[in-house]
Length: 265
Image (cartoon, rainbow, N blue to C red; front, side):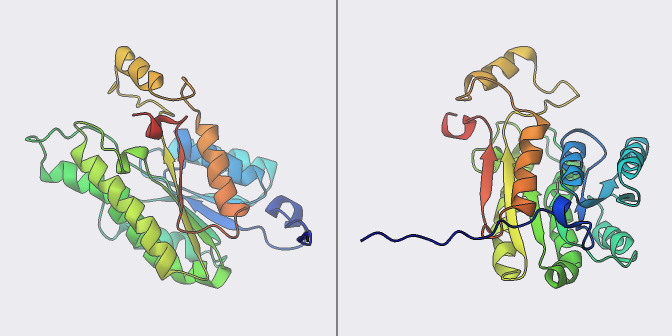
C-alpha cells in the first residue's frame, strides 16, 4: 500500500503579497556594510521593508536606505545605537516600534571581532565582544519579543562555526558566540509557538578588513574547507532569507554556511 501526501498550495512570498497587505518589517543590526548590508538587500528584494541599524557607519546606512526607497518608496529607514552599551538595545527597539508599524523579524547580525590572547584579556575587550555578540542580541530580542509575538515573527542570529570549535587566540569572541548559539536555542523554547528563532553560522566568508589573517593563514583556512574556496556575503544572506521568510516549520536550529569547514577542521 502506498501513501500519498496532499500537495499544499505554495505559501506566497512577501514580494507576492505586498500589493494585498502590509509588507513585513525586519530589523537588521549592523546593516550598513558587509554581510549585514547584503542581508538587508536580500530581504528587501524579497519584498520586505527593512530597518537598518548601524553604530558608526551613518553614511553607508543612509545611502543604503535611500537606494531601497528609490526602488520602493517608504520601505527602509535607519536606526542608530551601540549594542555593546547596556541599555542601547531598548533604545533601538523604541526607535523601531515608535513608528507604529510593529515588527515581523529581527536579524541579530552586528558583531565585533578581534583577538584576545589569554593573558591580555581586559574589561574593555570583554565588554565590547560580549556586548555586541551576546548582550545586545539578548536584550534586543527581549525588548522586541512582544511585537514579534503579536506578528508571529522570526529571529535569525548570526552565530559562528567557532561557537563550537574555538578559534585559537579569540577566547572572548568564542565565548560570546557560544553564548549566542545557546541563546538561539533558549529563545526558540521561550518564544514558542509564536516566534521562530534560528541561527546561521558562517565560516570563511568576508575576511576582516584590518589584516587579522595574513595571506598564508587565509590559504590554510581555505584548504580546510571541503569546497576549497571562500563563501560570499550572498551565501549568508540567502540562508537568512530562507529562515526568515520560507521556513515556517524550522525553529531552534543553527545552519553552518562554511563550505564544509566545520566538519573538516
